[in-house]
Image 1: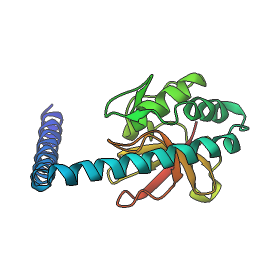
Image 2: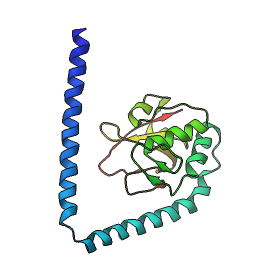
Image 3: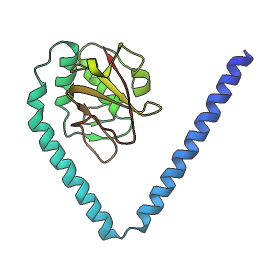
Amino acid sequence: MSDKLAMVKAAEAKFTRQLALANSKLKEAEELLAKLTAAERERLAKLNNDEEDADQQKSLSDAAKYSGVSGRGGIAIKYALAQIGDKYVFGADGLTYWDCSGLTMRAFGAAGVSLPHSSRAQYRYGKAIARKDLQPGDLVFFGKPISHVAIYLGPDRMLHAPRSGSRVKIANMDMGRKPYIGARRL
């Protein structure tokens, strides 16, 4: 019993440190944002919107390339393709707002696969797949610790709900500071 209590206390301390770090980063971001003039904030918002509009148009034009996949992965891809352009909201799982794991959870739910609403938990499902063996419909995971999941589409392309201020889209598999961790086939 004391081992379990020690594990719980260690987990609690870890989460407390992570929360403090997240709050610190949020405060930094808010301070930086407060230094911008209204015109600068408006310009940045317009640039982001223009980029999201361009990404959405490209994603919609590319979608037909990926609709011919069969099986569970194909059903999940078709479901997720229908969500292109929907907005990202942390913790959302449809039907017009999504986070990454909410999108994959619902997409694979449409294919008869029950997944939890957590990228880290989804990594424990299915069969591990080497990057060289990826097939359309595999789940791909990013971040240390895992904090992002997407649906693999084809050579270096994925379908995902990326982050706040963004929309569901098709993108390259480069997540910048979030490294590729692995893939699972359901």
